[in-house]
Length: 172
Image (tube, rainbow, N blue to C red; front, top):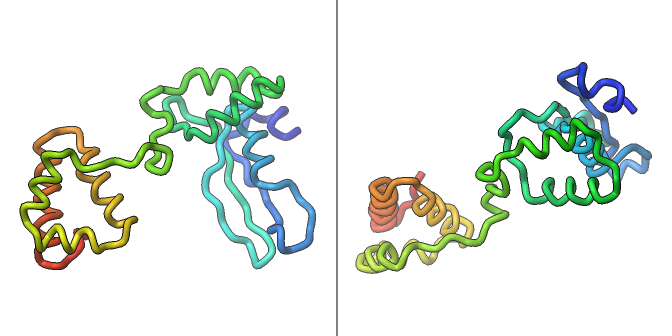
């Protein structure tokens, strides 16, 4: 009800939630996000209040803001259910495709290009160290290397990673 009356007048809403383990009833976070999306708002910073509760800050979406795959799907479902408000639809329609579904966990795993892998493997001690590191570290580093926009930057990052790995160190 608050968003219905204030979505176009206010710039922020702080919503309190009880943790499930508290045994106290309250709106749950996914329901609040759905309501926010209906009016073109989004959840933001979450802060702990005490052992039983926390709060989340909600604000209107900015044009060109990032849209997660999850929220895109939610808006599609909310639209199909007839729950979207005109301002929520407008915010969704203003999204930029290149700013959608961009979070690393939403994308296919990135791999080193065959040429870069060959360069890395040519330094056996560095390659051995790198491949013995946690898979999460390997993913982060490969993503960091391969997602650079310029080839020169990708090569520089690869060489940085090889140099650190050859010294049995992680890139920091």
